[in-house]
Image 1 (cartoon, rainbow, N blue to C red):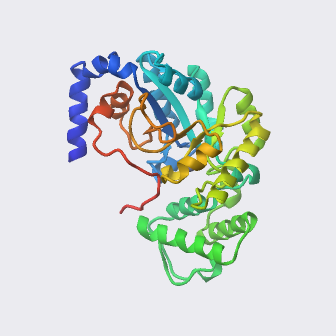
Image 2: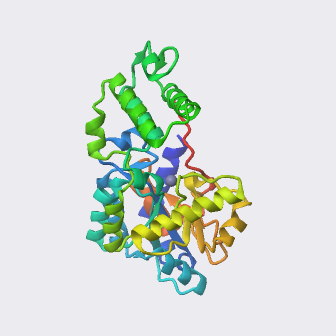
Length: 351
Ligand SMILES: [Zn+2]
């Protein structure tokens, strides 16, 4: 109800020319919008996690509206320098994609090329090098494929009791048990992939064809190299998509990630994005010690000259957003009206 009221209000403001007024204002010119995307569906991933995925059609609609709205889509590094120097062009926007999934390479990248827009990919490198689906995500996705079912005996995949796949909470519980099982057994990446394969055959899913489609896989080294040569900017997202609370381990994650990106994309990455949008005050001095220039969160907002460089807000776009919501953020109206800003991408099942 609240949401539909909000959307109606936004449509009225757009119709009344308020979006255009704000977009053309001095206020907006002093601000930078960093957009955050995750996956661009290869198949039906947006139906599984609509807050994480966008369809190629919707992404095209977004990029077209930036083009037609006269937005200046800038490379991340340049945009941040110009934000500080107060030389941003009107309607500045930066496009960022988290994780570096294969679907960025095959779906989003051609669209960006078509529109001539630069983009930054915050690449997590562990799965880029092992070329297998991300374990927890592929398990969740396959269980979702069998939503509505109750599996009575799951001993062959190492789990107790019936598996209730009828609700998101039930499916999440199964993923949790699989993760615990893999951790207890101290499984390697390869063994976890075998376990995902067992789960697939238990559910009657063709794992080989899922893998061949490259669903929930990170770009492989050849794809990262190719995208980098084509102008995609690769930046930091930790090697294993985690932020340990121990300084040495945290900095090791950054260093490993940086070394792999340097080897793949031949550039020293100095911009960081917090995995899952999770940050703690203690991380800031550690990032400074690693000479990190900027860090982005998942908190909603426009960046100003006063924004803390290591806590830059973004607007997360996905299939759950409507076009008018997107346009309200591009114009700046969304930022003015935002009442809930802090966010993480931590997955919470909702039934
Ligand atoms: Zn991520």
